[in-house]
Image (cartoon, rainbow, N blue to C red):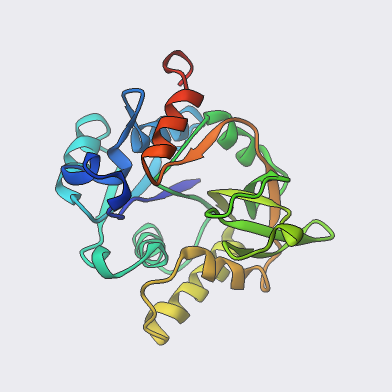
Length: 242
């Protein structure tokens, strides 16, 4: 199985920490977010990893390749006027140049989480799955709706009454799910020329084509967008338990 990490964003709300580094290299108790994600993948025997860089791409590449020279890095030179759907589109094109999409995991590069979460996702009986904290509602995060176990919608705009849970921006795709997701990305990016959309917009559409299920959260996580999030993460992930 392959893995795709979307890490092209600017992270302006974490300035001045992001004045000289990309958001994904901001550290939690001394551990950069991106390095923690790579460690999580390696711990779960996933070594075929692609990272999409953008802002401060040279710094990201130097840091990653100093420790992990085999990781494939794809630079999005359009990061300033695109969103992470475009990063996902670039990543899938790079990982599957023939166009035949195979199984892969995808995650945003600003989420600090435990390796146990990936262990549960990989072991899940559902090969198209969204890691979800069931019963949790976070206004700024992606939420999901479900019907008879099947996920029917993913969006930040889902209201509390319809929210099944909050996602942690970690996803699993099989060939069918990845193909459906990629086709939706192509439709938005190549055909409609819409470059500033979240990847979850295409995923929401793909839910209509392929059955996706929820993978229950098994561990700690925090999406780090600002200094308040960073402080909370450093409290949640005490150094000895990273």
